[in-house]
Image 1 (tube, rainbow, N blue to C red):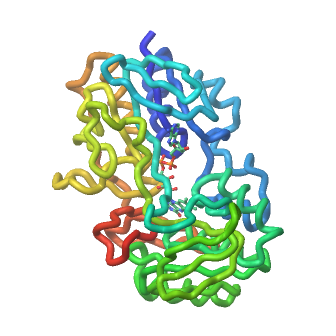
Image 2 (cartoon, rainbow, N blue to C red):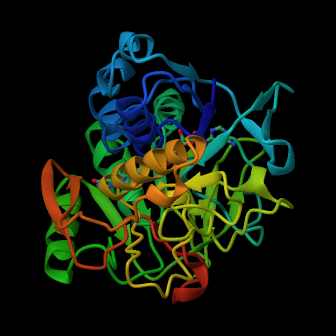
Image 3 (cartoon, helix red, strand yellow):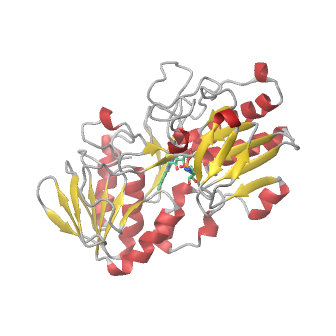
Length: 360
Ligand SMILES: Cc1cc2nc3c(=O)[nH]c(=O)nc-3n(C[C@H](O)[C@H](O)[C@H](O)COP(=O)(O)OP(=O)(O)OC[C@H]3O[C@@H](n4cnc5c(N)ncnc54)[C@H](O)[C@@H]3O)c2cc1C
């Protein structure tokens, strides 16, 4: 029996699994994810901050779905490396899984520059997962002030989610407005006003240079020299593709996995989809590679179908990817906004930015 392995179980990974199963009832499908949860609506994690909703409410499908569809869900398993020459992946627990085709759908993570002193303190957290949201909730009772570094989609969701917690919330951005490059100025100003009405302070044109504390975050220092006391620093900076497990392999990486029009990497049986794709070097007009939920779903479908065709020796029938998403929707502050044309909801390109590290 052929085996298709998917790394990542979110928008792109689940969509790939569903597309494969729709077209073939027999092929073995394994979906590996370092997260403990089955696929869920990442866009809605702010609801955990706002209303302490049970994570199960965010699940995209009940557990029975994966049993019925015979999709082997492997949560809580982090991939350490891929060995393309042996068609296998190695997990951190040393398990080896052999595949006939692999789909990389591992998304992006926020990162802090090594130039920022004290970055590894307890209380420096991303805001991209249910676990991040739960970790923030645990620290909230002992943190009167929460700082959020970055005013991209995740940072603004976190600010909004926390604004009901009666804590001081400060958003620090190196930009002149929030959600720059994602929504237009008018909408951004209106959202800024809504956030201020909820007690959120927004500090523009500033970056964090140091994090103070003995193990736990106690304060941060801005590039202006100002020190702000806080117990949590939420990071929404410098989103970089999760491709560490592909380092030193034959898979071509350039700020993400490079793919052709069939979403196939430089290795013939490795495909990729979603935020992990390289957004930098596609001169090809047919590729409209944006970071958004809907794009990840569309790309997952195509990568899934093409990986299946590879295992069936029907590569001549692979389908090219064309982004059919017309409107990229953002859901913030209870509003649904259309992102502007060309908007990337999680653009990471630090060196394209006028700041040292780009907000997501
Ligand atoms: C708070 C928030 C709000 C958002 N709001 C919107 C919105 O309103 N509209 C919109 O279009 N988009 C929004 N986005 C962006 C959207 O969520 C992403 O574009 C989308 O989730 C990308 O899907 P993906 O499947 O490519 O990757 P991800 O959703 O990032 O999933 C990648 C998965 O791979 C796993 N993984 C990574 N590395 C490994 C490894 N080594 N081993 C095993 N597993 C691994 C991760 O744990 C994760 O589960 C939002 C994002 C956030 C964080």
